[in-house]
Image (cartoon, rainbow, N blue to C red; front, side):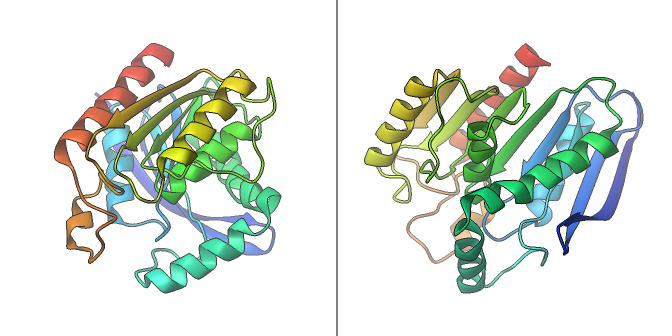
Length: 237
């Protein structure tokens, strides 16, 4: 088994410096995985996930969101997120830069790339798919499902896996129905896994420490959603 190599680096979106974190096997990665963090930006959990993916043979890169690393002040991160989302095309371009960086740094012998995201990151990877990025798979974990730029028929090239807490107050049933209708109209290959009684942030053990009823860790949903992702990886890669 090859060892895991970890690197940190700077990449750019226009004039903005962004910080990347890459974990990958020293030889022959199976595929590249872009890991997109929550609204708080890249944190230790995301880096742990990248190293876990690298241990399974993937080149995994955690991307930046605002160029400020992890932000623990939720009011600040919400303001930064709102400003970034205000221009949907610019929002998408921020993460297209990360995909380009992953393609260069992973040294893949093929162009097999997946993008996985958590919360806001789930929204972001779905935006990547909607914009027609050349991705094999996108996986959204408790991601937001709405968009100002719905996919057009035939635009989505990636397969999609959406892991959603049925009781998530940030993604109400109306938003879920609109998303599924959008995917149907776009002709997307979309799998949706729904976990009854589960709210937002179910993959993060730290969710239980936050004073918010909207978020809570759920060990079963975390385990089952990871298993679903790995099953899709095995099928595609």
